[in-house]
Length: 164
Image (cartoon, rainbow, N blue to C red; front, top):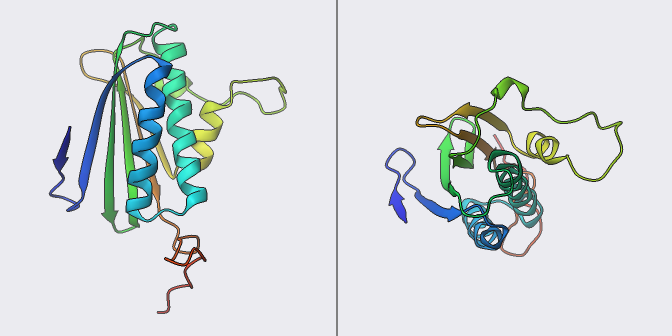
């Protein structure tokens, strides 16, 4: 279920679940824990968790047509590169393939319930890449980097800005 990522030195977690909404709380809990370990504050952790939840809801609804017995893999992986510390999330399904260029948010002027998942994902995450997965289905790779201005210190207050 977890493995060592030698490129970042961090622990990656891979969750294999069915396309049932009942599995979403497990993914949310794992995401919250991993995001906090990486260094995200409570607000950013909540936003990341919401983005993943929206992505999974889209897989269930659009990729699998609401079927609740189909496989989904979620990989949470710490990243530490030239942009800093962060979290890479990869969601892989085996559902309907769509043209990645056609995945976009609906017009926000179209006021109605639902349909904002793609907008939320693109607003919250720093990198968002949809692609066809080998063997069918889709893959969504999202990356979010820690903003040092909003990182919690042990006392709960934002960290002071780094000095050069």
